[in-house]
Length: 371
Ligand SMILES: Cc1cc2nc3c(=O)[nH]c(=O)nc-3n(C[C@H](O)[C@H](O)[C@H](O)COP(=O)(O)OP(=O)(O)OC[C@H]3O[C@@H](n4cnc5c(N)ncnc54)[C@H](O)[C@@H]3O)c2cc1C
Image (tube, rainbow, N blue to C red; front, side, top):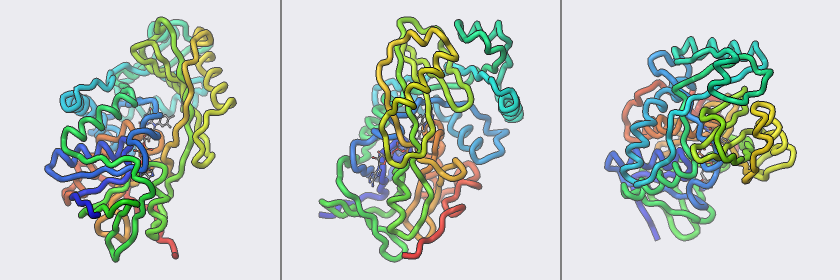
């Protein structure tokens, strides 16, 4: 049996679903196909931190995507609420960055200031006001008042419902999907049917490279495991995110606290480990000692789609006329999802994206494979 739509999106994580929703708003027929339930991989597992940006001063590909996205989050969440009737937990909670390695810390603060971000240096007394009970040895930090967060599982549910409300067809648990080259075009089939579409967009997260390989395209997207421990306290001691380098504590409004995360190159292995979890618990206690008494609710891990330069690949797949990709967002796929969806939509509808894609093109490190 043949099935057809204007655009077929392979992979229903936050990137695929956000892109589908954006396209559906342009009167395009869209199908999202996933080998399992949509929204159940990295996008579900993440912490939902949304750091601020300023598009006017953004100079790097990372800053451009981050700030273009940041400006969209608030209206995007309002649109989701309207379409789905669900609240994804978006809120501007602020973040305190605490630094024990002062050289790296100073560099980070200088970068924020150069970007024109609102960031207030804090002495010990001010730190205590944001985070009562902060470990005594931490004497300085910086507050980013614009920092926001979203609750991933709720966001994914709202996105899925909004897509459905806009007429996006979502095909889940389709089994093995095969993507074959037919000249300069690709064809997608499942065990049950051929999925016809004018354009195909691959947003399969850490699995994207596997889909590309049989097509003779080597896209270096690799899984990077991140573990999270979820704690509960009866009364939240603080309401802002606390970050120290690549580790963080994210309080939700209902007393749950996410502690993340590890960064491990262990292939497609998603288990939580004793070493990973105990490291996270020690980290939380070392920052706010009273978290040592918090209840451990559960632990999980997700596979970030890593890339060699930690930047996503967004654009037309080299060698093909009808195939596009949006993958490799590594630690920033949630925050960058609105901008990625906007850019992919523009590219697939032959329009010029609002931001430069320099540094994000899939050709920058891909190479044809000899097969
Ligand atoms: C612990 C952790 C914390 C994080 N914290 C943050 C954060 O605070 N802020 C932030 O911005 N980012 C964060 N991230 C990163 C973010 O979660 C990812 O960058 C983002 O979710 C990637 O989205 P995606 O849609 O590309 O991939 P995924 O969410 O992994 O979705 C890929 C989809 O493709 C499907 N798929 C795979 N193979 C196939 C196939 N062959 N056929 C059909 N479908 C297929 C999968 O089933 C899945 O549904 C975190 C990640 C982790 C793991």
